[in-house]
Image 1 (cartoon, rainbow, N blue to C red):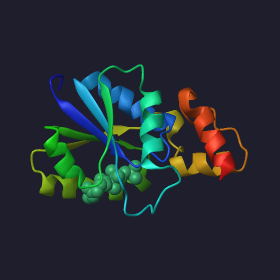
Image 2 (image 1 turned 60 degrees about the vertical axis):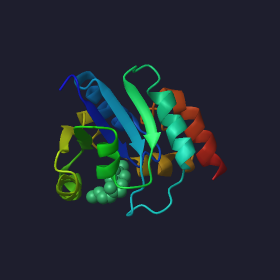
Image 3 (image 1 turned 90 degrees about the horizontal axis):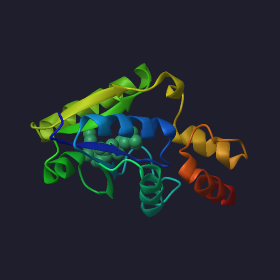
Image 4 (image 1 turned 90 degrees about the vertical axis):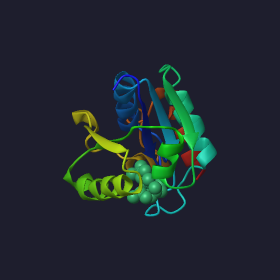
Length: 163
Ligand code: PNS
């Protein structure tokens, strides 16, 4: 897999240490990993702007040289084709993720048959972690320092405190 490009797509609203773990592990397997912020029709709007999300991801992956960060408004299958990517990588936390992820993987395969979706099991300590949990805790003044990359901790706390 060393000579190929992989895409790590997501809403990243905001990126968590769970996402970062998947990105870092992907970067060990592929020559280049593109982290792309996309829209999820099931999550309307989001709390952070696309620009804020991209900026926070860039700060979080600054020490991983083969990772690029981008955003895209269209279909993931089209984006992957335009980048000559061979794989989409998603993290799987629990069975609750599985059905939806399986549906997306099969749809993307239909739209772009050259594209494989690979699932990495989340690290055990991140099983319960999600962007929405982080937002809920931070907006109520709780400590999220174990859940988000240190480089963006203050960005998240300051932004969510403001509402
Ligand atoms: O982090 P998320 O919200 O689980 O990521 C889901 C995301 C953004 C990767 C997914 O909704 C997506 O691929 N959106 C782009 C639009 C698209 O291609 N939809 C069809 C996929 S089945």
